Amino acid sequence: MVTISPNNIHRLKSSMKLSSVVPATVTGGKVHELTNMDLAMKLHYIKGVYFFNSDAVEGLTMDNLKKPMFQLLQLYFPAAGRIRRYETGRPFITCNDGGVRIVEARCDETVDEWLAMAVEDDSAFDGLVYNQALGDPDLGFSPLIFLQFTRFKCGGMSVGISWAHVLGDAFSASTFINLWGKIMAGPVPHKSLHIPDSAKSELPLSVLPKLKPNSLKRVDSVGDLWLTPNNCKMKTHTFHVPADKINHLLSDQRSKVSAFEVLSALIWKFMSKIKENPEETRMVTLCTNKSHKREFEFPSNGMVWSTVEATFWVAEAEVLELVELILNKKIDENGLIKEMMGNNDSEELSSDFIAYGANLTFVNLEDAQIYGPELKGKMPVYANYTISGVGDKGVVLVLPGPNYGKKGDGVNGDRTVTVVLPENQLTQLKVELIRNWSIT
Image (tube, rainbow, N blue to C red; front, top):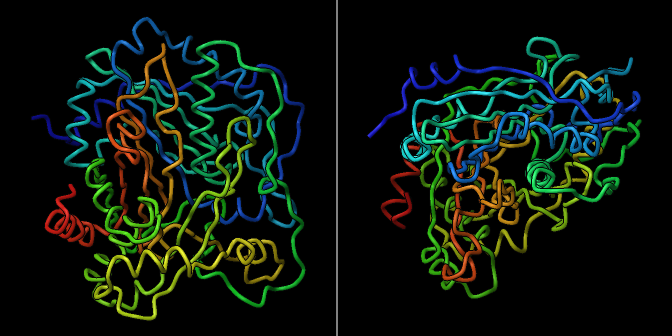
């Protein structure tokens, strides 16, 4: 079996070629105001990767892959812009057609070999999604999106997207990629994107909010390099939960719940057992989607951020108790986040914040259409998303699996659960999930 090594990643990176794609027509110097929710996410990045077999990409040239981007960026013109600041220091996007960065790479392994490596070590995905923070080396010239096309020796290809969270959430990122696939397949309607309420700009507030959101953690100001360090080594792992396991987990519940609530409750319980101080996991953050229709919608940070707190020992609780807590006791914090990010208090202006990993954070991406993009009518054989810039408390993303929604796999289908945690805690979580639920 092929194993991931620094040489694999080094050879892949040494083959990289960079170029840019801009909107098909000049945008005209528009300004895209960043909302307070956008600014709360500025230190986070969304990373997605899609794998296609050779029959999906045979005959497709780099020009074929780039061409749809010109029309796509006409619709998503802020994505081709660059960050600037007002005199007050508040960032905005100038729509200057700076472009999206395109990365071409080649790999000496097959798609199957690379996926097999990723089962053992998620760092295999790192070389397939370009990693560069805003402000590295210059904020004013940093692209907001990187798209990496990696060709494998079997003829297959991966598409990796690095999306600055300040642009929008994971649903916005996946919708962007899905529309790219649709434009490649044929003409799409020429219409403007709908602007949701969550994408409409807000005025800075002059008063300090009375309450602070528990879902954010203050960090030192990062200046013009939008990157925050961790206090410990963070690792990523992806668990695959098959459809029969999902159906079994849901059959144990008295009320109608989704796989997200049950998997979150399960991992919350195990993490409380793992933590040296169980008080750390009394409160968790939930990030859920409120809009199920994102196609032809302007990118936005429209997910709902809430916290839920247990008044009992989580490690000793029944999963059902935690599910009920998640369903009925969560407190929406979007309003508090917007207030805090919009006020002009000097303490707030001299600080930055992280959201993912401020508490142990559970993100519901079950409805994200990550298997939506098609090349020559073929879906990805595998797709996955993760978040970078995660705080030390960690994040858990619940995503559709490769067989989600396919006939014969039950009404619920399988799930992919991507976890970013401190390395020692992740090792223990793997043991707990294998021992108690045979989840690997």
